[in-house]
View 1 (cartoon, helix red, strand yellow):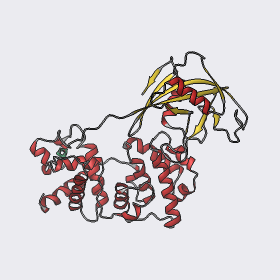
View 2 (cartoon, helix red, strand yellow):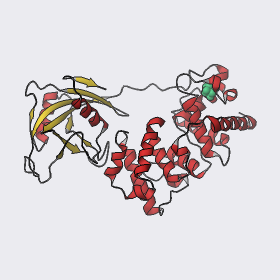
View 3 (tube, rainbow, N blue to C red):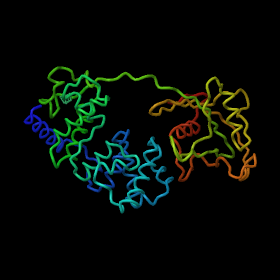
View 4 (cartoon, rainbow, N blue to C red):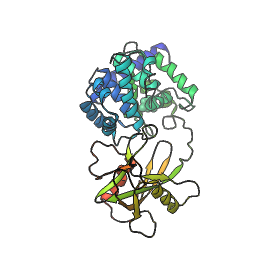
Amino acid sequence: MTPEQERRFSKDLLAWYATARRSLPWRRTRDPYRILVSEFLLQQTRVETAEAYYRRFVRRFPSLQALAEAPQESVLQVWQGLGYYGRGRNLHRAAQTIRDRFQGRIPSDPETLGKLPGIGPYTAAAVASIAFQRDVFTIDGNVKRVLSRLFAMRTSPELPEVRKRMGKIGLRLLPRGKAGEFNQALMELGALVCKPGRPDCDHCPVERSCKAREKGLTERLPVRIPRGRVPVRRRVVGAIRNRGRLLFVRRPPEGLLGGLWELPGCNLEDGENTEQGLGRLCASLDQDVVLQPPQPAQPHLLVRHTYSHFQELLLVFLLAGIRRGPEGARGRREPLGRWYHPTNMGEHPVTRATGKILEEIAGRSGPRRIRR
Ligand code: SF4
């Protein structure tokens, strides 16, 4: 594009955004804390889902101070069901760092922001531009798709060199002093008009600037890199009951789903069958358990759960637990788990896969149902 075309593109885009944008709660505030919360929630989450969580989150933690002071478990409880719990833990830690190192004021500079827990280049640029109008350009999945089409790029936007080129293009297109609006407008165009699959070019405000439209390439771009097969892990899970309660264990505080509660389980190793896995699981517990019904050792329920980089097949067994005192069956000082009524976990957040299992157990219509 010539400088004149670039100016025309930005003008068309901003004029469209002024009237067509969705009314979202984080777009009606200038409060950097609320914008920070929204950017954490929007990572890998659809806007509609993020909106409901945003409202709940800021009602529960209305300020950075309130969030920083809250126990981690309360934060995870509000985050429950959203997935990617590392984001919730990182947002909590970022709030504590800002309270302790920046006197509670969110830094405006993208480099400083990028050093806070859970804030990568995208989130740093988004917060700096939207909350502080810093002239930085943001690139998310929507922006990659729009730019790939606008400039008819024949290489995948996932390649680092293409991303770098997009960064340079974005800085040229960005009208100075309006970075927040411009970045959001480009993302909104990708979400509402220049969608994956079939873009709605007939209603596109920047159609006259689009090279893919001119060349008839709109549905063939962006170029995709074929993905490999997602590995499947098998996990034996025990739904261990005692007088209407189930035994729950808490995951270690760090790592995948850290700090959340789930039913006890163990991953099957290569060559291990479910019966062996079940034996290993029972041996690892500090409760005496028996299968329900006792034979054969078939899973009562199969639940499939997909994470970003693998899939888990959960083989759920119903077991009866013999509840022990605080020392557990094997004389441990600390019991490994706690007994809760599955519909009354109080403040304790459970993993999404556990939520699926609990729903299925509550509304079960027969054995070996598969839930995806
Ligand atoms: Fe996307 Fe079509 Fe607009 Fe080009 S003209 S930016 S392909 S919606």
